[in-house]
Amino acid sequence: MVNSSVVNTYPLSNYSFGTKEPKMEKDTSVADRLARMKLNYMKEGMRTSVEAILLVQEHNHPHILLLQIGNTFCKLPGGRLKPGENEVEGLKRKLSSKLAANSPNMQPNWQIGECVAVWWRPNFETIMYPYCPPHISKPKECKKLYVVHLSEREYFAVPKNLKLLAVPLFELYDNVQRYGPVISTIPQQLSRFQFNMISS
Amino acid sequence: MGNRRFHLLVLLFSDQMPMINGNSDGCDTVVDIYPLSSYFFGSKPAAAAAFKDESLADRVLRLKSNYNAYGMRTCVEAVILVELFKHPHLLLLQSKNCIYRLPGGRLRPGESDVNGLKRKLSSKLSADDDNYRTDWEVSECIGTWWKFDFETLPYPYLPSSGKTPKECTKLYLVKLPLNRDFIVPKNFKLLAVPMCQLHENCKTYGSIIAGIPQLLSRFSINMVFVSKHKLD
Image (cartoon, rainbow over all chains, first blue to last red; front, side, top):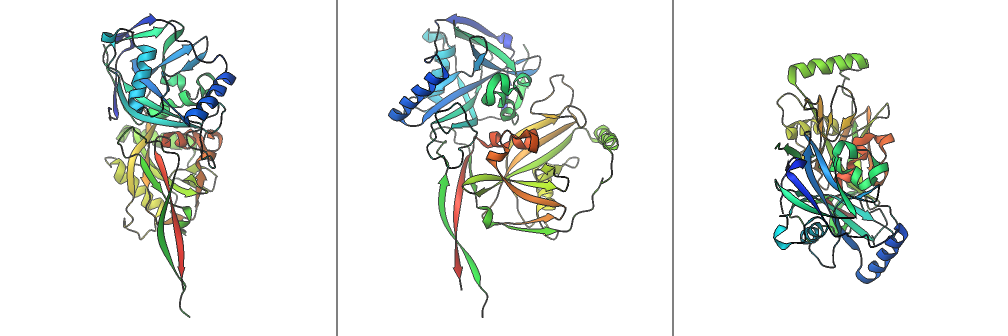
């Protein structure tokens, strides 16, 4: 794990993007998703999910890589850990599943950095908080966001049904409407880091 | 007759929020916080206000002249937590005109962040004759905000134009011991505000203070309970 308050960001143009087979969402509606979450909770207890903040730079401003489903919904690459799975290993597994080519000799060297935020889901509802609310002793999900330090060059294979976007921090900041409370607050959570913006 | 003497028997019942540091970073992300009741709060005379009747225009002129002389203005502010009702609370100063502030203030030219913050904490939160006896434990920087121009809104990133911002505010986590005396100037109130009230409440507290719960979310906040035992 990389423990550094300096984040090297390389130009978006350093990275190449191909496609691979689609990765469909397991649920077709929010209601389905929450129902499946409830089933899993009965079997395995609290869900732990890990998500990655992959940073690049454009015009000297940090950008985050987001996966877009359909026309509007954006999410960070990541997902649910298997019971007992190590967080760093689980995040690498999810990153490879979403963004790496299938070939074993084209696997990016994922460098997982610090955890920058933790969000808690108290009930089987969509709302999450950056603390475990008072009187909640059995949260249903814990979601942890990690900075991922990208290498200077990388090849990403994006599932055909998803788009990979590079969104500037200034576009995310204060934009809860478009990106939701977890993604729109990432700029503040990154503000303690020093960005070393490297040009081509 | 004899005086009633109260002894604080420290029974450490640690009520941790659900474990988040299961198997990840080895950083020091555990923060112990103590009950509000284990602290003493008193007051001292208000300090003479330096720029009491300054107009906004005059203030901007003053900031511009300081910028030309010394460069970017840096402010350091303390994020200090206590426990109440099993939920972390943030210590905030409220001035007579209802503005909420974190304890802290502007650095002098050449002053380090840590020294400057300790100086400001002593000035705002300790007795005048404390003479730096109170040792403030300044921990890590948890967030930074920049003002791109004088008296504009702060943003959590640098301007992409490459121009130097006019002001930078750095938030530092400050860890408290079990006991401390807080002596606050009479023109301020010191409040303990629950995190759940700050969260997303930019209207009342401004973006910087309302964003603190998210900046603290990566820490494991360990609420230490203390039992008081009375002796006759």
